[in-house]
Length: 209
Image 1 (cartoon, rainbow, N blue to C red):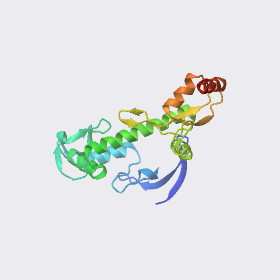
Image 2: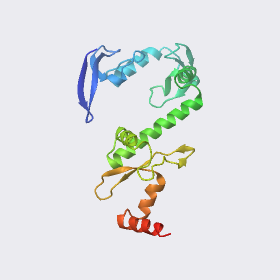
Image 3: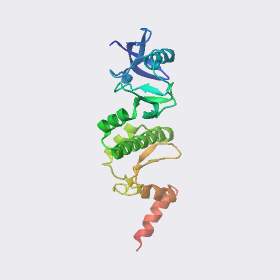
């Protein structure tokens, strides 16, 4: 496949030239989206035409599964509003089997999906608040030995039974990242207004006894 680097939606990515399975026109498609199991369509019209040819002869109450090839009742498919017929292309049995092969049990699947969602939300939040990528965070965490930059202990606070990540500490005046702190240390310096003089006074106070 011929590859080309294109800038779309403000980002440069690798695209490859593929042929539309409906009209035969050659067009570019993201390399990450190429799969032998997926069809290639240059636009939504061609996608709809292909779907019509595939399912047009069937009864409105029946649908042919893309994976197993069996014609089943539409009730045997999951709902999907983005599809023309409002159901998934694969039947429930095939979806469950593919999910089981990839993730194992349903509990494992849900846990992995929840973890992936949390990771995406964290990445978005750090990029928005601190201009920090998830990889930058991981690198900083490794540099600190995966412990708090002040107390030298790992995070102990949990949320829904899961240990929360170390907090990103930054200067509110310069927005410069200072390090990663556990929840206690991060809250402690915030309560003392991040003032070095107050912190030194607090140390002197503790050392008097």
